Length: 354
Image (cartoon, rainbow, N blue to C red; front, side, top):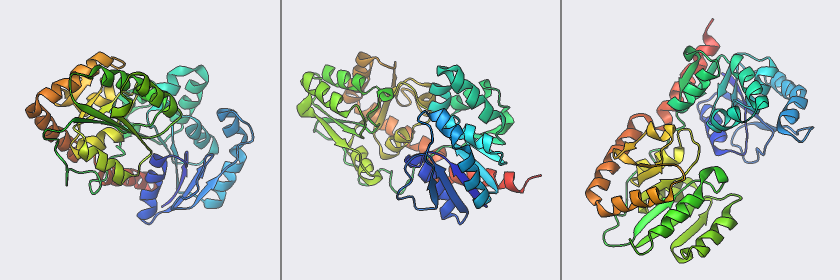
């Protein structure tokens, strides 16, 4: 197949998705308004003629069409139901697959009338919509898409990297807590810092925050002001092998995200044996139930998060059972390769169908 991808070339999810098809021998082209440097497959960066996202996309439609015409795709895959989905629908190329990845439907869609219009337009013209969570599929149905045009495909994890081999158990050492979310407001890391400060004097513990983003400076200052600066480590952005190493050292993985689809970070932690303590979002509930595979707390509730972490610290037998349950859930439906093979099958069906 000749597959044209429209998406943010600076995002690991987009590159990873397109690279799967490239590695399988398909002819691939990524067209992006963002940085594509270092892509291991053919990619073109389009300069926006206007500064705002929607206007910039619309003004560049002619250039995008020329790139697609030159490439001659059998199928177009827009990764993000918003801007890229809209430009994919406007391009006129079919079949069109729109890949919703979370914030497009859960944040952008309800945020404004303009976002709602462009996303509805993209979804209406899609031959297929892929999602990575049941709750995300429900949002797509609510936007007017028939369930028969939706397929759930998780981004998944690579078990050769994320596994429990060589996992270091804590023993009598401090409780190790890790977060691997990037440092953006939507991930709510201020709640994690407040909860960790509450643990002072209750449990000998250390917190490792992996990732980077615009909130890093403010979060580092917040940790110092809470008196926990000497027990909190900010590692910055890590490669997958280093993230796996931190997860294998950790007793608890925490996600304080305010909104989420299926989080690859969560699946990585589950595979590496760090017990999840995560905000009670619908997408998280698809992978763990409170007390089965992990613990849930109300989003933004620092005290509830503290209590959950302390309960695991005080009950290592419970933590061990959750570790087994969460690893089994990932092995069953959260692996990268089986999910992408399904995506490839769906793309082939569209290209070879009537």
